[in-house]
Image (cartoon, rainbow, N blue to C red; front, side, top):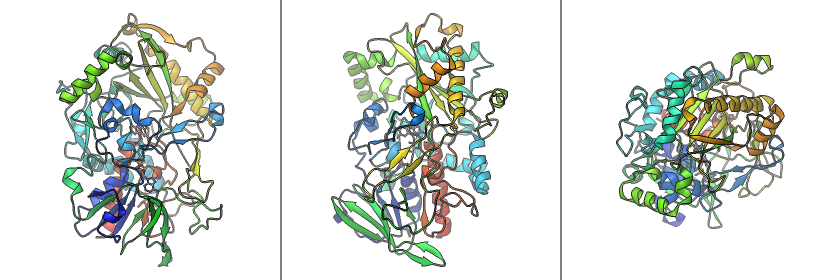
Length: 556
Ligand SMILES: Cc1cc2nc3c(=O)[nH]c(=O)nc-3n(C[C@H](O)[C@H](O)[C@H](O)COP(=O)(O)OP(=O)(O)OC[C@H]3O[C@@H](n4cnc5c(N)ncnc54)[C@H](O)[C@@H]3O)c2cc1C
């Protein structure tokens, strides 16, 4: 059951306390409570996702990224690599965490990414082959709500319809634009090959978008893992508006630091949860300094912060079938909303991206520029291109299309630290964007490649003009464009990275236990040792699915 007020909770003694009812937290809560002998309390700082229209209607996602009660409202410190700009780091402050307000794009990354996880942690359990069953436990492949013929748009062999979280092809594809994109793969098959399914472990190529959408509505960890068939379990309690501020009752058991519960705040009052036995998941770890005494010496906490820079290229086009016409025309907008209300179909049933492409930089070009390959392996992309029939109102009144260019394996690293002893103050977030030359180089190479794509004959009568003259720009001018327009893909990971059991760096062991502690695990996106070469929610779900199994195994 979900509770809003601590006084409604039946008790404050649980076997497991999960800090944060986010993407990963709700997976762990669901899987642990499959065992009726385990009692679980999820403490979520944010508010309910119930009835929040902007979280339900896929097209409305952008509305959620404004400052509001649904947001932690974080920004980075000034970024030297972005000419001193700060960038926004949205994080959801609601049940479901970022799965309740993310872009819903479903990409697993490459098999190489997970094989690198396995190699670096020394645990083959993190390899692609061993994780595939967990992808299948998570994914409930769902036909798109318009029931269009999906043959040739995905490979059923790499999907599962037995999981919990809905994944589907878009039900609305902006056909004029999307057809030009697909036509380009036929006209430029060597440089831009078609990939039937980017979630097969081999993402290279261009293919149709898959999203965490079911029946024309967002599927989040709150709507799926805490869905009606699970939330009434007697052993599963979720408390909203409860921000955890401290781990308490520390003691040493068998030489390892153990905690007896957590302290959390609701409505200005502090409460304590005391487990009889169990694990506790922790998010922001307090660092030494600022008068806070450190119980565990783990210098890697908050380091290795990794996020993927993204910037946009746009073109004005000779077509009114674009998102801009929909956003700027009240009649069309109202019609689309009425259609969604009637049948959950139409443009509002999708989030506006039509296809994605993944490609590698040429190894010789990398080597001749003295860069080593930052990717996880030869089937792993360096760059993602996201296609959208919109320039998101950047040129009001014009019809435009755009691509988002994402540097998938940034070498730049940042940190997440604190500068206050008040646990309710915001952390200091530095994503370190474009502080490594190879990241900027990757961006430049991607621009050149994308400009060639839009030269394919199919675009000739469709494109009017590029927005900005990047084609005739020098490398220095391209660098300035990238530095001045880059923002976050919102894929911040890695600040509590897993490493091998005997490694002298890292925060958690391969079984996700905090190093030097017992009964304390971190199960969320912060444990990625490297970012995967795609969007991060599928990897987070899979880490949580396996993490839950590791906990169950330890307590059976
Ligand atoms: C705007 C945006 C768009 C994105 N788009 C995509 C996309 O299209 N595709 C994709 O694959 N990935 C996307 N991502 C990334 C992806 O959603 C995240 O990587 C993933 O959801 C992270 O999951 P998590 O469980 O680690 O954290 P979260 O889902 O953020 O969960 C953390 C939860 O913990 C709560 N919490 C934090 N501190 C405390 C505390 N002290 N006490 C109690 N509760 C606390 C938070 O309120 C939150 O609910 C996007 C992210 C954002 C923000």
